[in-house]
Image (cartoon, rainbow, N blue to C red; front, side, top):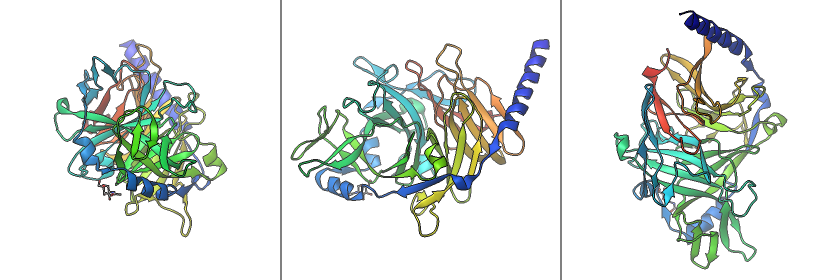
Length: 395
Ligand SMILES: *[C@@H]1O[C@H](CO)[C@@H](O)[C@H](O)[C@H]1NC(C)=O
């Protein structure tokens, strides 16, 4: 009893202290410059040489099955990756999962080309240096979640690429060698954060089927391969840091807020010290699927900017739920056996408190999916993809 009381006091104290520490920053200082169609001409050339497939087609051509993951009492659903002789996404250290989004981000009703899906991003960790030519970059798991029974979910991994012209004048592509800490699907666009640069944009209206083969790019006339991945998505453009403040920002995670007017997204920053854990909100134009630009420019200015001061924050989400404006943050505590993550909840104008130990180890990016907070665990051997429904969260 005494222990319980002490704990309560500590938590309250922590709550008060940390709440006091959220600081409002000058949003006008956080600006990005957009080149959303930077690769358009190169993508048009790829359109001519490679067969275009729809998201639906990829989801109808999954080659792995997810497995059920033992549920924490607060979780509504949880799956993990394929593991079978000769194939193991659960334990691989070659690829590390980071970002999450779903068809509920793409469209309000969660249905995309007749399907429901969750996407997750993985970065290639098999080579220490991103510049190593062996580094395959980033892949996206397309999980077909159309079935309401998560025991029936299946997936396929698809490779992201950047188009380029070869010295010989041919159209080709190379890997996207970034951390891909967060992703967001909005209409036909897939936003992928690029830690030191900004945000990369991929267009899901351009997905290609390629041949089997280990190289990434054009092999010879009519033959293109992608490290034995069957489908690739070429980068269409990007938003790069413009202001000095944005240049010093680490683009670590991203999530959509469909409950703001207009729609908006949050990008946030990882920092293991708690000093610089900033989040910025940018507004979106649902017609172009791009950030809203200052009139007559390609510059987008943040609408809100905060330092959350939350040590090892790995994901941020903003949503009006349970009747009020709330933010959710994942906080990781290493990969030790007791490293369960905390879900921090900031009810604006009221409190900022942790929902302790409710997350897996190594929780990452966040997304709001059909009234549930979804995230995923990154550590090899313990990698759930899971949701917590609104009703299981503290009011
Ligand atoms: C590729 O397929 C999509 C359907 O998923 C379609 O919207 C798009 O226009 C197609 N693109 C090309 C270049 O044919």
